[in-house]
Image (cartoon, rainbow, N blue to C red; front, top):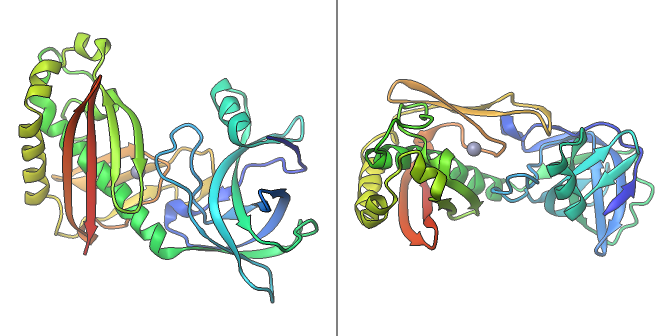
Length: 297
Ligand SMILES: [Zn+2]
């Protein structure tokens, strides 16, 4: 959709620092699917990304002073074109995000409410994120990073030439070179990897890797059982707050080495909160799929 708006700036978001509640000013509201699409100047909600929609949007509530909470049932990313005064959502936002145009990213709170919100712009409101769902998604998202580093480690021997870019631990970064899609829910994540011509040209032995897939899976699970989880290992995202389209980095320390991975999601603050990570690998037509299940303590 393309909607006229007076909003000119991107939303300030605080999810990276783990925030679950913010007081904010409503900047825009428009009817949508029997409810409302609401924008605020500052939000703790993590919206689904346009360019890499791995982690789904937060759920929660929007409450005006003295009123009942309204359910926020989804959270998406929109783009504001400040020069034209236009808000882009859905397919139009995805298309614009690929165009390279200079636009401001905003959090779209999808509110389910029969209350008329035609006159709420300028009002203060409180936004609360549903804590259990956020905690589950943060746990699974953190597990994805640990699993990706473990995949790189256990697949390192299948690179025959000079290795391409390495990860923070010094292993060839198969995850970064081959991942095409990632999908996180509250119980697991599924990552899809493509091993195409370019990867083979870079020296990745596709046939040997795919025929050893069960061994790689065993090696990954064995590594994930043996190390990294247990002792206190703080992890953080920085900066903890900023404009939605700002760059954010997830970092932790593994094997005594500081690891940094660009990431726009939410995470747990210490790896010791993870009791177990288990992975499954299976071949697909042009590569393989990695399923990661992370269990908390
Ligand atoms: Zn992340």
